[in-house]
Length: 328
Ligand SMILES: [Cu+2]
Image (cartoon, rainbow, N blue to C red; front, side, top):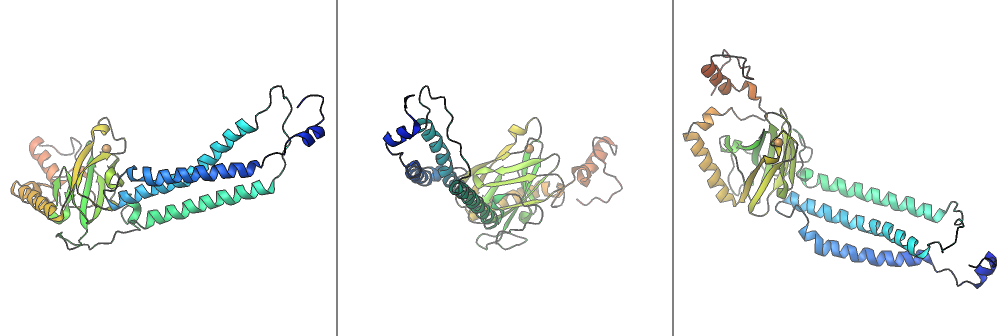
């Protein structure tokens, strides 16, 4: 406006102010719909952690749903920002203040209702997605609230819907997997049967680690003296990697192992094969009895050897008392 005009005159002459709210809303709804469609149909199938297990599949769904929930919010913020810069930019030489804004009931109500709905939606969706898929592949501690359905059994046979129990033992800097249903045999690879409910019992022998079989969508803290339970059901066969996800010392980055999801029959062949081999080599007899946690400093076999080899007790980090009963 020129300096000679009064604001009233300018208002009378100027074209009617466009309906910014409706403009913004129309652009926002179009962009949001397009973004959500792209997220859902193009991005979602490629999102981590993939669909190798039921828990992985659920996590992929969660990420996709959260992305679809967040996109309209992000678009709304950026759109308003860009619109304000372009449309409401101050004219060159205009040093005046903008009109003062006082309480706007519409804006306030929209803000409170909108944010409340978003928070409630995230709460409900998050709670359901944690509870329904049996803890969503996360460690639930020694007594899980959300249990995966499956039959508890001392042995495991294919097709019987037996829950497979696998103990995951972390130590600096390796993972060991112990299968109590196969004589307590130990393996450095994590083989699992497909379409079988698996109950992981995660623990550690020394410092804190974290068992992260990321394409299986499983992540559970491995703490000494703690039995941390996590569930999953692998849905497709193939290889996967396990990493440690808790800084646990200088070789933390090298603390990873591999695993394979096999057909139930192939898994049984593998597991019984390892069991037989470890039995004949005397490995099973040398291992401590299967337990939910271990204190490596008081494993009798270990202590006994130290005593025999070194002729000492209470040294080298072991406090095994040689008069304690030894049950190999
Ligand atoms: Cu570690």
